[in-house]
Image (cartoon, rainbow, N blue to C red):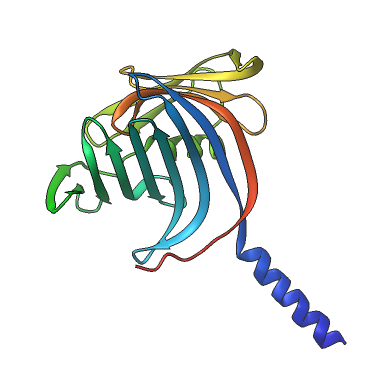
Length: 232
């Protein structure tokens, strides 16, 4: 009997270790005629191309566009390691993009596939760079949320500073949220975080995918999601 209990507990532990709480945040997108809906999901740990990563997914869909991204970030810094993007946009057409971040070489390798045409671009950039969604999840996890906080945000083609400016009430869909407001300088991004323990990113404005957009939270979901190992 004792052996059966031990075995049962062992398998229960295995099941618990193989699962994590995934978080999905739902958004509406409004701007430049590309209105639609989006989801931002923190999936959890993933093995990808021989590396331990954390997977963040972003999916946006509208009448004349779609943009789906798998963003593999470093588990500690939440800096991007790989980004896979499938896009379809009336202006740019349909295609795939793979971004490989190689800070040890000071390079970002971007491979774009449209139909049978494959092109590659190499951006020289010293050190690790940021991804807006990786930045948001990292700040939610370990940020101090003190008014006046100034953080560096290093993007592939531009370096920014982003400051926690104020705390105010943000109204969304008839509901009022106590929120923190961050703004980058130069003014590329504005982010409002819920001031509760969840620190939901309530609104994100700026360059998102291929267009400048306003994303406003419409809901969220916390669910148990199996963590799978991605096979190459």
